[in-house]
Amino acid sequence: MKTRETTRLSRTQVAIIGAGPAGLLLQQLLHVAGVESVVLEQRSRAYVESRIRAGVLEQGTVDLLDRIGVNARMRREGLVHGGFSLVADDDRFRVNLRDLTGGMNVMVYGQTEMTKDLIEAAELRGTPVIFEAEGVALHGVDGDRPFVTWRKDGQEGRLVCDFIAGCDGFHGVSRQSIPQRDLTTYERVYPFGWLGILADVPPCDHELIYANHERGFALASMRSETRSRYYLQAPMDVNLADWPDERIWDELAVRLGPAAAANMRRGPSIEKSVAGLRSFVAEPMRWHRLFLAGDAAHIVPPTGAKGLNLAASDVHFLSEALLAYYGSGSTNALDAYSGRALKRIWKAERFSWWFTGLTHRFPDTDAFSRRMQIAELDYIKESRAAQVTVAENYVGLPLS
Image (cartoon, rainbow, N blue to C red; front, side, top):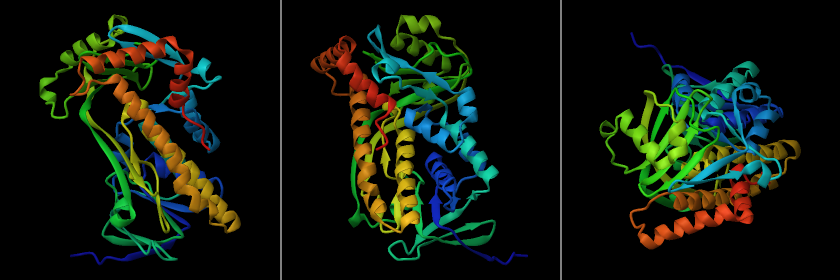
């Protein structure tokens, strides 16, 4: 017998679409300041907690997690990095982040782990997160009483709110709810991808290594002291069946150089995938009572480790604007949110675009272009001023 569907009616101050790091972090930032919110996520909790994503946190992101008290496991298990290495055809040098930025670092802590911590914090604090919310739709965004509808377990949900935060990623419903005539988008799709491998082996170095090799880019990274993450530049149409683990390890040893190869521990992959590279920005990040944050508004190539960190800076700015509204009734900070966030976003887009161009082989990279890459890497190696520019962008520009 068919179960009669019922309707759940509810009210909150901020409806947050998406239970990725942006949405969950925004919820906790609002919660500690006394603002109510509900997070709606179309996927299951198990799916969200298992997604393999980035793992380098800027100083500002670490500070935000400290501020809301979701930091215990990060501080216990995260790896503080005071630098990273650049390699150009086996010529390797280190960029000393801590020295060049007056003591700032980055933290290697997987986005998957950060997401788990935020979900656990939401449970402990009683802030509602609704997983497996199907057919999420936004209504009345251009009016005074927006609301969100969805379906779950045969029931229809309806959530009335003051504002909606669209933190549901590039393919989510939030940006798609804005009329195309009111959005301007900028995009560059790169002609290659990253072939990634995750393995339970110690990393080949205590810090990240970015390699520019004549055979293509490579990155040695890690998720912990016993779990390594490696990447190889590869065509987007690469067939993973043509890349057994041993071939990947062999290619990494060549591209990363002899010092890394000598310390590389090989082991079976526990995850293998190819990810495309894209630069994308949508403007503005506000449409009436809908505010975009994170991948819903922008995408960066992973080279500069900016995607997760831009999401964090977005929700930092958005939370400040919402708190200003609820504290004084003024909409000035809400009106300024898009411009404030985009100012920082475009600087991160620039760095990610530049760093990708510096370290990868493009189809049109001729002998002259290759010499320009090598010359620029050599200049960075020999110039403290150039290294300061790289370092301050890598650790993250101020959240201002």
